[in-house]
Length: 535
Ligand code: GLA
Image (tube, rainbow, N blue to C red; front, side):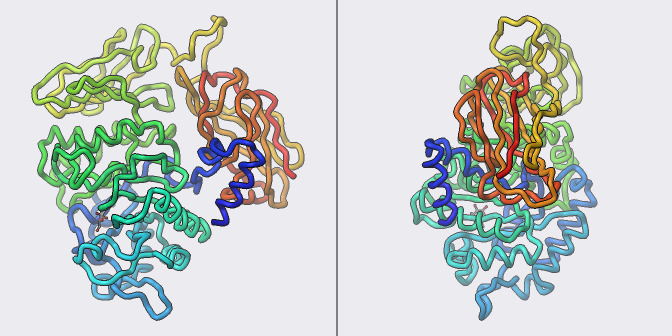
């Protein structure tokens, strides 16, 4: 509530409350800069978990090589807790399931180079408690601050927070999820905040951009190991059904904030190998968290090959954090394209039909220009050349992914200056600054025909803590910022002023903070007149 009041006041000053709520409130807690990767206990083990199992899974993540490919979060889902809080109201691990305690489990994971995730709910009962599969009512309702502190003390790095109740409006959900967001932030520990607003609730996950509240938010009801359950957004969801809900939400994805189409079913049977590969490929291009849900102790070679596909992991973990946009969909042939930081584009050619068919697009349709391209098949590693056509024969429910490189740089709307060559590789542009103890440097993180992403790092050049910095800059083409995170934007187009947000707090002496933004138009030229001032 405190935070909302502060933002409202700032909004009136800025004269743009709507824009402010969209931009200033973005959660920026330094984690999940790319989609989190890891493993979660629920899909295979449900309520049947204990510390031995979790440790075995941790050992398997390391032994299989998955950790070193990025799978780091080990998330202990529902049913880990004692059904009663202690006399001081603290949560505890279930003493027969986790006899060493939750801190010891966290220590075990950390010692293996892994991260510790845990499940809890914002309401009174966890989902297993709601459905009667587990006793008690130990939800965080009314205990948010206490529980956040407990999690931080245990070394928790990731909280899965599941609204498992039919009650509450979407506004109630936003307010309640924000309580835990703020309680986690107040602990000072960096904790990935993963929410689910959809469990036995009206499906509010796809109804808004939850990036102001959480690092990742479920878009659908629970996944199951089937291709298509016929559900639009109801229990349980198949792969095709989840893709249908999540593709249109692409614009919400950005570093620190991702659509979550749920934990993976790869390696859990119920689908063909083609479908399993398609599932993984689609999650990869959708910039979805890659949270495995299979028994990692007994993976067959096909499962291992899918989870360890480094081409797709690289596409998923690309630093731009963009989710693939839909290029076309005729009901059978669906084409998605994800821009990557080095200027390449990953193209998914997805066959939703029941027979083999050719799925195709063109380099220009995915935002590339020029006449000579290289296509690398993410599954086979085969490399082929193209003058613009991009197509493949795709089996039913299959997805071919090409990483397309070459051609001219993705360009902005044609300009009258034939010599201008947009920069697509990240470049550091030192800028003027330094007044009153801070400097600002700009980096172009990505540039695509109709927009770009910029990042500004504000450095405190003094030794005293800095709070209240302001960066002024003029976007050289008069572009408009369409999304901004980790700062408060009080400008409209062209000349903008960005100040620090209440939640990114004080920058320590010689420390820095980075804010990012996306803007329309080309960003090939750095902003001009950039200055940083402190109060
Ligand atoms: C809900 C969630 C699942 C899982 C269970 C645990 O159904 O959506 O992912 O966490 O609760 O009970």
